[in-house]
Length: 302
Image (cartoon, rainbow, N blue to C red; front, side):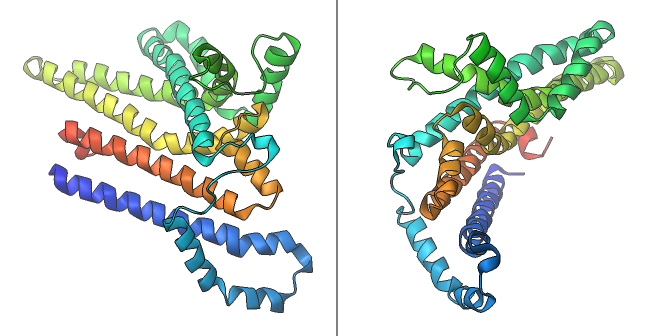
């Protein structure tokens, strides 16, 4: 597939996903939201009359979206005057640390599991199943209590700007990122091991004259699989960051969404959801375009 066609398809798919998300956010905030807030006291005739003006609300919603005025700033003393972009940087910092720590666990453990399965299995299998099945909120509360409150090893709340103190910035994010990376690390431990098994199988099955080419193709395919998975999972991690941000009081998009929901602040809710979707889709699109430009195997879907 030519890169131009591949790029057009990826851009079209990203725009389609973003448009569907925008419509879904409107339905949540302006159709389902009013009914849930009023509960059983809503008069069906009043709600039906409200729905008859949904098209006008949707037009106003699109205008505020296109003009960038959904919620220019987030207000309230608990947010400390953070803006949408400030909250996004906090969330992306947490997601970046989550990916780093998760791969720091998954890559060595996957290599060991493939190379020394007899004794590594005793560590890898319990880690994979426990980390993938444990409830994130429960792990956050337990680790926050013991490592933060009782033993005072890591801070359990607060955020430090990277430009103010990079060391404290990293120190405050280690514990929430570790909590968030457990299911992520468990999944990629198996992905890394499966990719290595494919490389080993290619080396064993290929004829001697084709062995180097087959092994190289298997290694590239494994790297592409891991990279595509990371680009896809960035969006999931932005969503899952809600739990860690609420548990550790990090002023990111998750905590902002929680406070806005409690205050029934619809413009802020809209802004957080739209901006989070835009960031996730934008990162995925940029990564797929770069990967497609560098590798034909990437474009072919290896």
